[in-house]
Amino acid sequence: MQKDHNQPHAEESLPDVLMRVVTELHDVAYLIERIEPQLMSDDGAGADRIMVLQGIDLAVQKTRGLAEFIDTITASIPDTCLVDVTTAVNLVNLADMK
Image (cartoon, rainbow, N blue to C red; front, side, top):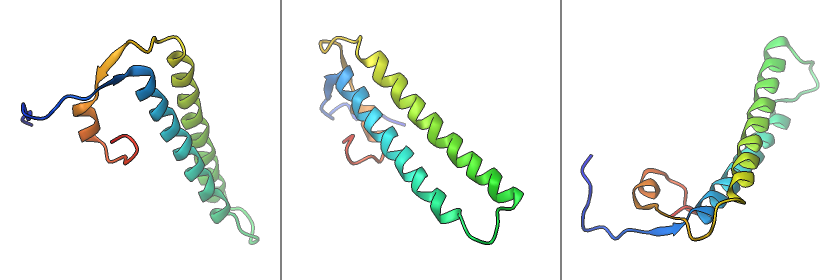
């Protein structure tokens, strides 16, 4: 991958960047949680279905845990700590990050 040396650099406060990541992780957890009711049905719960639901629950817990971890460490980072997010933003397809 070649770098575009003409591309302007976007320096942002590291805490601001991390808090946007926290927001995205909370959004992901919410979206995953919305899947669970779709998998529930009145015809009983087979072993496969229970394993899928447990996996979804674990994914939600881990996503929220990552968000809380980042949120907690972000509180100790000074706003004067800047990072260049140019390359990182170009690698993701998150509209809010751009």
